[in-house]
Image (cartoon, rainbow, N blue to C red; front, top):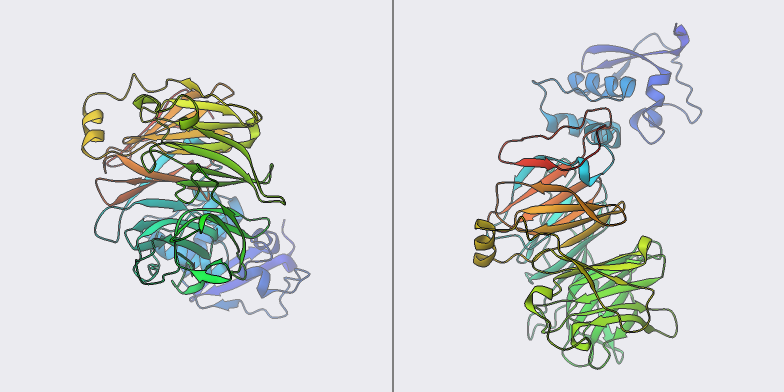
Length: 469
């Protein structure tokens, strides 16, 4: 039985609620309720009058029940957007997110929504945010969505064509863009993700002079607050630039070695365990593929490198590398070709490195999928998260698990056409389609729910070999 002194009463929009200090403590100190009472959680009121809150009572009841049970039950008459807005006010957004979807697992993902884009033309890149939101690049515009999938003011860097975008945190987005000839443009900017305000411009200094440059792929070292970007200038400023996230000042520059390609990189990935940066320049941007690991500690050096130009010249078409990703857990590099064949290289090898190819997709990509790929090619993309490999191919994403990278799930949405990009973060997987200006949102159900193959409208989720929960 509850102690009467432990009971707390609220008047929310004219409706009375009664709860306990134990229930409210589940909200945490950073919530509205943590700020309402003192630091010692002394929740005893000196008055018999309930605490008045001028907010929506229906939403308050749902959120109070969430604090009591850990489950989110939204009545049919209550708009989700209204509840999400109220959760933000009370500082309970994290509680709602945890109740809506469980820990990320590629074998348990289900399609929860498909969102139409806000700009004409096709999107070119999508990036998941740390809090479950995302941003999508369309030409010279970047559209930002919060975790409720509400769009914020768009971002644009002087109408320059966007090459890449990346999240520093849930409130800051970096945009890299092409230089416009003769304009002396700065190729990178830091934006407030909420209001679209431009906070920083990142400059390249060469011979103590500010240079115009095109910024390509982006990478981030969150521990040391560094931003990396591939840079292509007009004179000698080709390579990888490094900037301080807080001040925007240039910290370093790794100049492109003779006979190698860094300034046109398609992918940058920071490897915290080895303190190195993966730089991959891939076909068809270049005739040959160049993959390397750069160590920026003095003296700067390229500590690992591979190129198809150095392993027998021009490779066969089916062995063209389309994407690459490093997996520090296994000290290996994974690459993918246009048929979704996965290849693996040993990062511990300092000499000539060969690719161990493993055919994955010959049995599934036939007929109309081949025709679709010919009409509008979407090269495979790779992702790595929680020890699982992800690879996109046409309109589906494959999930590989275990030490032998066995195909365990295939995620497919029947609407939107081929997938041109995907990204994982904030407990979600986002897949951007090329034919329709639309992106899909995939989430894992809460752990308490039974694992089921779902058939949402306009899409299906196929679960292969997934373990029963």
